[in-house]
Image (tube, rainbow, N blue to C red; front, side, top):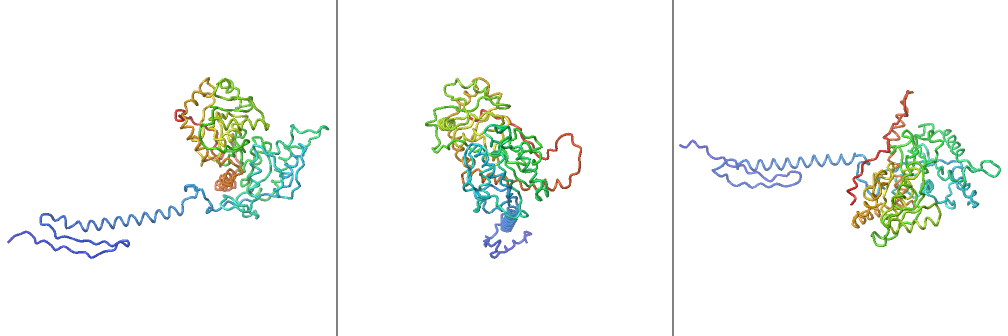
Length: 479
C-alpha cells in the first residue's frame, strides 16, 4: 500500500462580491507535480481584498484632507466666488479727509470742484497721478455688486473683519503746487501735517480703534511720504504701500502689509508679442539725478548714454514726456528700471503694460503680488555694483535671444491685468485678495497684544518677518 496521501478535492468557491465587484473564481484540478497551485486562488482573493481595503482607506483620507485643508493651501483658482469674503467697514470720515482733499487740490490750481454729497463719487474728479490706488480702492468699495470679490462692504461695524480708513493721504501730500503751501500773506493755505494729526485724533476717539489698538484698520499710504508724520501711531494697521524704503522694520513688513503697484502713467501696448517694430534695445527716460539709492541713475547714464542701440534721456513729468516715454517703451525690447529716491518707481509698471522687458537695477525693491507672479519670468534683475560696470549691461542684453524676449513678453501679457487699476479682474481685486490674507495674522496680533506686559527693550519690537533681503541672481539663466 502506498504511503502517499490521497489528494484532497479542491474547494470550489462561489461568486463573491467585494466592494460591489463580483469576483468569479474558476479552479482547475490540481497537478500531481505541485501542491502550491492549490493555494493560488486563496492568495489571489486575499490580494484583491487587500487592494480594495487600501483603496477605501485612501478615499476616506483624501475626502477629509480636502474638506479641512486651509483655503490658502489649495491651488489658486481664477474664480474665488465660493470663498467667504472678508467683511470691511468703511469709516464715514469727515469730508475734509476725502472729497475735501480733492476740492482743495483743484482749487489750488484754479479748477472748480464738482459739488458732491457724501460718498457720491460719480461726479468727483480725482486727479490722475501715480499714487492713485487710494481712489480706485474707495471707488470699488462703493460698488454694490461684488460677486467673486475677496471682500464685501458691511454697514455694521460689529460684523467687520477690517476697518478701511479712506483718507486720500497721497493726494494730500501734493495739494499745494509749491510746498510748503504759503499764501502771499504768509499764512498756510493747506497743511498736510495738520490733516494727518487731525485724522489720527479722530480715529483715536473711535470705539473700534480703541478696541483692538488699530490692528484691524487698513490705511493706504502709497506715496513713500504719505502719513510720515503719524506713521508710528498707525503702524499697527495693515499699510498699503509702494515699498519699505522709508519705513523701519518695526513699522512695516511683507507679513503685515501689502505692496501696491503704481498706477501706470503711459498707455498700455495694444499689440501682440514680438520684436518687430522694437528697434531700440534699451530705453530709459526719467530724472537723471535722484537722492539716496537713486544716485545709481547718474552712473548708469554715464555707461549707457553713448551706446548706439540704447535711448537714455533725461525727462520730467509732463504730457509731452509721457507721450515720448510711451512711444519709447512701445518700440523697445528692454526698459531700464533703476531705483529712485526709494527702491520702487512708476516706470517699472509702465514697462510691464508696454510689454517692454524690465531690467531692474534696484537692490532693495519689493514687488507686488509675488505669491502669484514669478518676476524672474518677466524681468531681468541686476545688482547695482554689477550694472554700473562699463560694458556689462549692454553685453548682457545683446546676448538675450529673440526667443527669450518672446518668452518674457508672453509672460508679461499673462500678468498685465494685475497692474491695470481699471480692469474688472485687475489690480484692485488682487489688492483685496492680499488684504484678505492678512485676517489670520491680524487676529493673532490682536490676541497677542492683549497678554503682553510692559517690557524693557533695547530695540523696537519687530513681531514680524523683516524684509529688504536680496538674493544672488544667476545671470546666466536669462539667455
